[in-house]
Amino acid sequence: MSQSDASLVPAKASRDGSRRIGDVWQWLGISGDPLGTNGTTRRSFWYAYGTTAVFAGVVNLLNVLTIRHDRPRLGVLEPAIWEGSSWLSLLAFFWIAWVFWRLAPLRGRPSWRLLLHIPGALIYSLAHVGGFIALRKFAYWALGSHYVFGENFLYELPKDALAYGLFVGGIALVGHLLRQQQLIHTPGQSLTFDIRDGAKLTRVRLSEILAITSAGNYVEFALQDGRRLLMRSPLSALENDLTGRGFVRTHRSWLVNEAKVTGLKPGGSGDYEISLGTLEVPLSRRFKPALTKLRGD
Image (cartoon, rainbow, N blue to C red; front, side):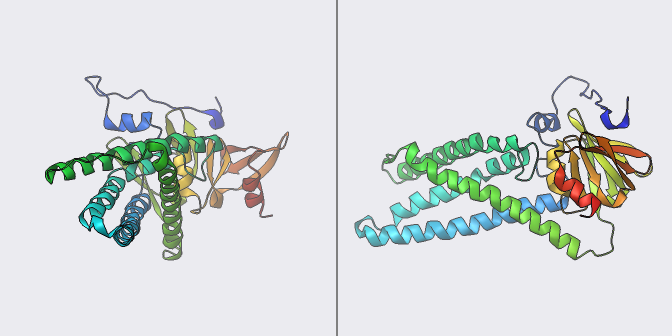
């Protein structure tokens, strides 16, 4: 079996046969760490969450003032309950957009995975509407009254779909900016990456990684010193983390460290073979941007 199609997928399970939380996240298509594999990914979540909380809070406050102006007989309490419940429900279910972004990064492959954002937006809208209705009913009950939802789900769905799209785009943008900032503020330094497999963590320098390949439910890191380390994660999630940090997708099953490429030769039918020292990695003709980048065109 050649290096390029090797697939090492160890069968790991707890002794009592129970499913670990990492296995659940893997079943969803992301690594055992729902907030990502490194500090940049975690910060992108919290920065996007905080920005969303502030921006949505301002919008909801403006809505309260608008309702108060247009319908002065209502007073302030009811509009505050409506908008406040919507804001709290948004914050409670923001994680849905995050999970679907991890499942289908905007720059990930294959591109058909972006279709997952359609059910993602629907699930978010159902959760958001159900959440704010429950909060409003509780608030009205506490005040000795009764709340009746005056709209329908189809009225809320387009607004929630737009909000979901902004959440996903915002998460991607924040992550991109954080990665660029990290590169700018660490010139000449070897950045590190945490390779996680369950409770085990191995921290390596990015400069030590030659390539990363998909290996069933795992990805396998080929290191410069000959080690092969496994991590539970789809390759598309790592592509999203490492794009802009010196790695390029050359094949549906491979990510390559550009700085470690030592040779490039045609393999026939428009495909190429990439040499990284003794390691040979395929470059598919479908990944033309990678060929252009590696050839320096």
